[in-house]
Length: 297
Image (cartoon, rainbow, N blue to C red; front, side, top):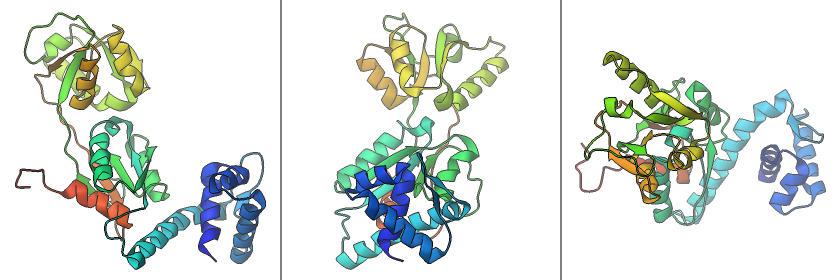
């Protein structure tokens, strides 16, 4: 079994067809197909079901995760042999839950890229809740940014710092200066990103009930996070966003204010216990660095 056998197999699965994998690999379709057939003969079992869209047999599904981890191990060996201590090249597979796609993912990825410009980062969506950890189990990603407690004992969690939340209102909304409290927010229609800010929305609902105030009037409940700011700018309602996204909305004309309440939020960088690739190890090390100018305690 050669590296190319596993590489072509994984490429075909991720591309959805052998022909598309060949195009991405800049190879002929017969070359990719033959390599997968050789792998099947060596393992003495079919791995894929060929058709308009390639699918996996049970044996293929069992092989996929170990194949991905083996390819990352090859990359680690190459880095060690070549002495690439500065990570001049490499690839990092990172899964991110929607709620963390802007904060803190953008900040961390930007810092990592500034330090290691030769590393290519592939970011994929992770599902909310325990289902999001599938990307680690199947080795689709080596690292995961998630706000859910790890459902499996073999995952290590590194706490992440989160930006403060800010209230964002349509352009021209008359507001007093200073932080916006829950009673003021409740007087406005709101735009909620269902997949992105559901935890925040739930907490606000509970707190409003405790204050004997009416629940938020949700004008738009959008499953598409990217639509939230355009909807606010168009006057559909107010929202609550992490500070970087709120500041960006402010530059486009939205009225932004600090919030006068503290929402309990958590976020972690997860990875499987055991050896990490050089790129993943560098990413984890960056996250674990103490804040600049701080003591780290």
